[in-house]
Amino acid sequence: MELLQLRYFQKVARMEHMTKAAEELRIAQPALSKTIAKLEEELGIPLFDRRNRQIQLNEYGRAFLMKVEEALNALEEGKREITDLAGMKKGRIAIATNALGRLSNPLKVFRENHPEVNFRIQQIAPSATEDMVELLHKGEVDMCFTAAPLNQPGIKEIGVLHADLHLAVPPGHWMEGREKITLEETAQELFIEYKEGHPFRAMNEELYRKAGIRPEIVCEVEEPSALMSLVQAGLGVALVPACRRDESPVAMLQIPGSRRTFTIASCENRYVSLAAREFQRFLIQYFQE
Image (cartoon, rainbow, N blue to C red; front, side, top):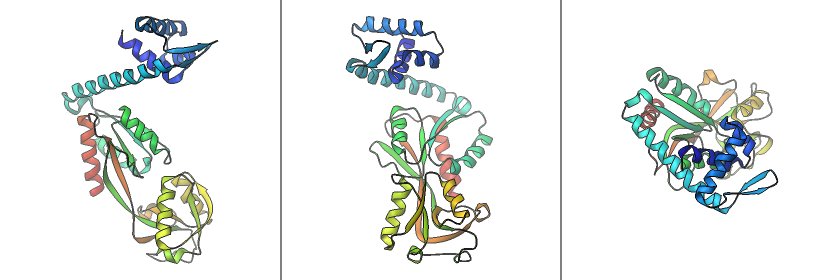
């Protein structure tokens, strides 16, 4: 049994399509089929159910895939440990994030100080926190930078950025000149909110509940940029974490006692490379300053 066979099997098992898997692996489809057939022959049992030209992973294949992914992940971690022996010179950091806007500038600063470190960034939809958990458990990313807590067993989270919540109001709004506002004062306002199921929506609704208000929601969005654009267009007000006032296109009124915490999440039982550990320390220091 060869390592290449296992990598080919993993790709076919994930896609359950021989031709598409061959295209991604950049090999001929007959050669891939022959490799999988040879693997099944060595194991003495079929890993796929075949119907006409379609294939589907069977119960033996699913059990084998779990072990193959564990083995390949262990090998990948071993490569990272060996790389660490060379220090930061061959460092590679894989990150998943649903708050790329907050991460872009620290990434730039870190790269200026460590140009030899390579990054692989996956942008995740804010509502898909389960995708980040899966990537961490599989070892496909070293860490996640998230604006919503994952709250999952086996996942360690460190709060690195605490952003006060503000009420974003459109130009010419009657509250535009104020510095602070309480949520109780916004009871009659029209709100722009995130869609149901979005973690920020759940956080905001808890704040509304504590303030004893039930705001009228006139528009629902998925992205923070859409939220701010609609506020700027005058459709309503919205809750947003703090940003520099000279970077905001709308008036920002602080809501005392309300904040959102951005965290670094990592898997407790997986190896974290030297480069990734250094980047974690850098992020903590960067946001403290």
